[in-house]
Length: 363
Image (cartoon, rainbow, N blue to C red; front, side, top):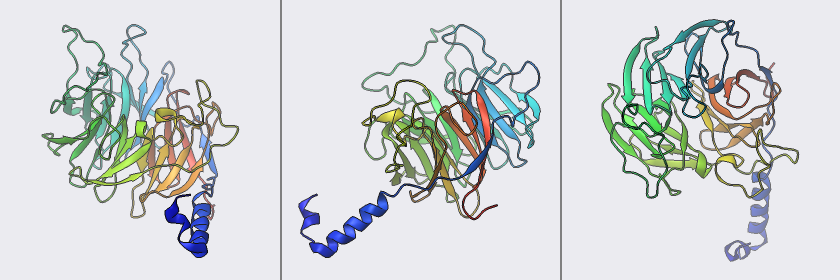
């Protein structure tokens, strides 16, 4: 223990010990039910890796899946956008064979029920109207006639190009309708556009410092218009105002990993693991609507969902890795229309589960 703590006397030491004991108390488990067969797919339609899930104001569910694959095993086109009603019944497929559909990564619904997709493979973000027509297009796909090969990571990173993406991951909006794209695996920044689609600015670069990113993998906003970025490789959620000014950092740490925890796939991580597979490394974030907002955060190992206050306190935890209902295989996106209703899209289990949380005091 450092000298600055020891010299405060017995009273200070007692307070510090009590504080540390409080901080180390495990977050409570949240009881929940899960429906892994909520979505009713029509005959001969299948989900692949579910990269995205979103819910609109009519409670329709949109699933962006790495299904409908065409092409070779490497470099295949794998993106399919499906809509279901509030009871899980299939409604339609949107944008079949769309030029931007290459490798699904996220789907979001804005306050006007427009549906937005983010495609990591084509480096594009597309806005659909509620009736399924293309309204705005962001970024540009590499031309097949011009050596269209995947982006590679280089050191130092390539300079950013305004209005273009390199493997974008997610999209959100502030209270004025400005558009924010987490961009992404290669660029490691946040790109901002006006509500009309005009380029405004970007912030961030590859790194570990405040305002830097290591795979900004998911993005969300609160009722004040603050922007939350899941900085997955750095095991934190960074919070900014709508102009990119850093506000705070949230880390889901101090929640003990169960001794019987195992990864959904791959070798058992070491206790010192960092980056993408570290406990609490945020793969997906979702902020609930309403006046009393909370954030849900998922990790890949030990495969849990954390309920977190917007000031960073872990309020509860649920789930673990596995293939059964109530277990998760790499949750890639969360939709949270309310505090006790979640929809989670899983990459490894090729499904969407509807979760109903039963926290203490509810029926």
